[in-house]
Length: 118
Length: 118
DNA sequence: GTTGACCTTAGACTATGGTCCAAGGTTTAT
DNA sequence: ATAAACCTTGGACCATAGTCTAAGGTCAAC
Image (cartoon, rainbow over the protein chains, first blue to last red):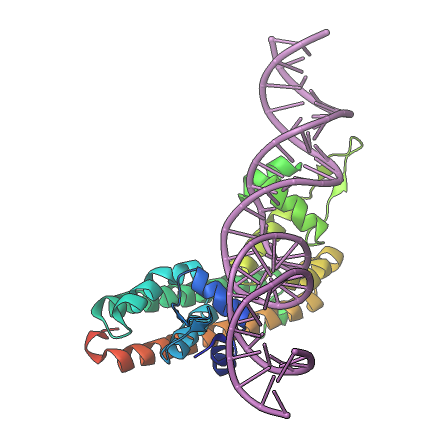
């Protein structure tokens, strides 16, 4: 698959895909003419990057996982371990948000008890 | 209070405080010599900015709230309304994280059912 | 054989939230 | 009167995650 097709299938721009490749998050072969050639699995990889970003991970934080996936495929044990660790990271973020919410609510109740309906 | 004291009390750098001031998030008077003079309440304002940032708000997203606080003080009804709206924003973020977590878990279970212990 | 759609690279540019530095003014203590 | 410890401004610089542009190569159709 050429980069334009991958971009169309994932909704991610060609430029962003090239950026991910430079960062080592996704790999491609090359045609003889120099064009990138992505395997079908690239769609899943891009979607995984989008998912990870939506929960607040930075590209840098995805590099170990994505390199491992590039080497061993999605189903390997190492990758599973890394993903389980990511789940724990997400749980931490959720806990931090909860805590922030509680502190904001406390502040709200402290400064204006009457208006705090939430 | 001079900027250095405020920085020490809040753990936020002088430069960051000056940035917040330029962005309209916090106000200060000036001494005759040009030095900034912050009221005691500035500590609470900086802590509020830190809290808001910790739950993912950008400085730009705090501008309406902080301007309102600067004008009417922390306890006004308008400020309370804005803060309640921020609580809802946090709830949205938590929901998005939950959803992302669920999707990551689904992916994990799909690609390697054996290793998914979380 | 030229047009249009695609691809390549490098580099400039954006916004966010800062940090760091230079050059200079002020205050306090000795 | 001079040093240390503050303060001021402006501007350069950093990382992050891209977008956009320029200059050029490729390919398929007509």
